[in-house]
Structure formats: C-alpha cells, structure tokens
Length: 338
Length: 122
Image 1: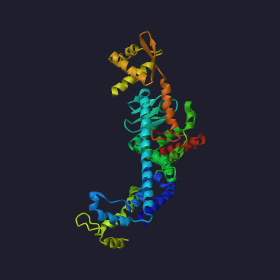
Image 2: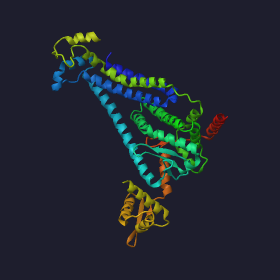
Image 3: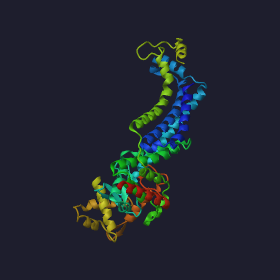
Image 4: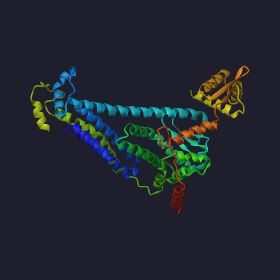
C-alpha cells in the first residue's frame, strides 16, 4: 500500500474518532489533557492530508543540482519506494492539495491571531482611559451595571471586573474568580482558542474541526476552573461566583445578558459541586504520550518508504561509495523491504 | 510612554469631572494641584486626545475649549458591550467568566450549592 493511501486512511480514521472523543467523559476529569488531545487530533489530521499530498509528488520530483547529482542514486531509490500509480496527474493533484491545505491553515491562523491582537489592543486603549486600577486586587475596574469578569490576555495582560461584579462577589468568590482569569492568562488560553477557532473557520467540513473548537472552548474553562479551585478555598467559592455572575437578569442592566449565547456554565457549576475525581497522574501521562504518538504518526507513515530505501546498501549514507543509478540493486532492495 | 498614557488618563479624568468645556489652561490648573506640569506638555497631549477622537473642541476667543466626545459611562458600556457580544462566537480576544442561566437552573444550582456548603460545615 502506498504511503499516501495510508496517510489518507489515517486522516479519515482520525475524523471518525472525533465524535467518540467529544462524547468521552475523561476530558472533564483532565481538561488539559483533553485540550492536548484535540490539538493533536486536528493537527495530525491536517498533517496527514498535507503529507499525503507531498508524498505522491516525491515519485515525480526531479532530482537535480550538485547535491542531487551526488544523491541521485539515493533519490532514485527513494522515488522507487514512493512509486504510486497515477503518475504526473496524481502528483500535480497531490501538490495542489498539500499547498491548499497548508496555505489555508496558515492564512486563517495568522488572520485569527492578528485580528484578535488588534481587537485586544483597541480594547486596552479604551480601557486605559476608562478603567481604574485596583492595586490591591491587581485588576482594572470598569463602571458598569452588568456584572462581568474577563481578561485581556497576551502582552500587557490584565484582568477586568465591572463595578457590579465587584459589588456582587464576596471576598472569597472574588479571589476564586480572579484566580480563574489568571489561569487563562498563564495557560495562554487565548492562543489555544485562536488555534481551534482558526481551524474551525478554515475548514467547515469535516466536522472534526467544529467539534474540536466547541470542546476546546469548554475544556479551557474547566482547566481554568481546576486551577482556580486548587489555589482558592476549594470549589465552592468559584461555584458561588459563577452562579452570581451568570444568574438571570434580576439586576439593573442584566437584560443584555441575553446576548450571550452559550450556556455551558451550568455543567461547569455541577462539575464544581460534584465529587472531584481527577485522572491519576500516570494515566494522564500515558494519555499525553498517546496524543503525542497520534501527532507523530503521520511523519512516520510519510517517511517509512524513504527509511526503507536508506536502510539498504543501495542508498549509502554517508560514508560508503555512491553506486551508479544503473546498478540493479533497486530491484533487490525493493524486494527485500516490501 | 507609560507616563504619557498616565497623563492622557489624567486629562480625560479632568475633562470628565468638569461640568463645562475646559481650556488647556484650566486643565493644567487642575492637574498642577497634584504635580508640576508644563503648559506645552498638557497642550500637546490634549491635542493628541482630540486627534484620537476622545475630545472635541470649539473656539472660544483665542483658545479652544475641549469637552469629551462621550461620557466615561458610555465608553465603559461600549467595552462591556464588546465583551458581552463576544459571547456568541467567543473570539480569542477576551476570555470571559459569565454566561446565561435561566431562573430554574439558578434555583436548582443554588440549592445544590447550599447543600454542599452545609455538608462541608457539618
């Protein structure tokens, strides 16, 4: 089987695995591992498509130049190992596919990061003149009747509270809420969200990218919740604060809350109130390593014909003599490894 | 640069606090109560704020009188509007801590919280 087919098959199986990961219960118990798993899954899927596209071009790529002359035998060997049916047409299609996927990913990722930074800076400029610093809490306070807490991540990051939130929260809850936002900043969750959001926008199909973005948004909040409960006084102050801030529009300007669609805050509060059962450390490590394996596998699949070619004597690296391309070793090598 | 931003903030505070449009000299007068500033510095920064759209000015005799384009509350509201609106497609700009719950959910969760809190105490 050619490695392009293997890579595409692998990518497809990842896309099919996504719904199972979305349904799984363990990411709630280890949100950071869950985020990593989604990142590995989506990146690996993109990699396998891009590499599949590149792999089919190898068999037709011209080997030229000084280095090419030196390595021509080697190049021929590797080409022989990547030989796939279809010829130039498939190779052209492959390079277009690889370029399109890589280009679209890069474009959307850059746009997402730059756009977010621009918005953040504009927001920070207004905030600098309107907000008042609270040096004791280390936050910026904005006068508004709607209770809100948020952070501006990135360079010159800050945590912002509205005066209504400041008034509504008791000291313990306030500490928990600030710890939650601080966890967002420390975890660079804005970059995590920018990555997931960019892929969601770049590829509306297949559904894996949309699922990844939805789950990442959820898990990022849970990861910050976990960190906040660890350094605050247990999960109850944070649960209370979430209830206080997310409650129905029973205060002055609260009606604007209807603009905020979403609603994953109730499961979060239930999670905080329920028994805490994080995954065991060893299990988390194994999971993280498995996700890493998922990410590395496309490279292995793409490289294995080249490895097969270089592992036989016909492709000498780097000491022995370069044999002439006319030696029939190509055939023996191919038969030996396949 | 940091000092410049602080001065912008101080000038805006002064303009917002004043009941009527103010001249640069009036701003300077109010600010020098706290620290020593040169007229030119305050004038330059006031002009910068005007250019940025924070202040509007009108000629009054030989000097300009400045007033804030929008009130402090309006600016604050615009910020929170942004945060609130980002709820639907939560951009990476702001990571927020609030969401909407309906009344029955709140009641149910409040009860659960009270139960947990009571259980911890006993």
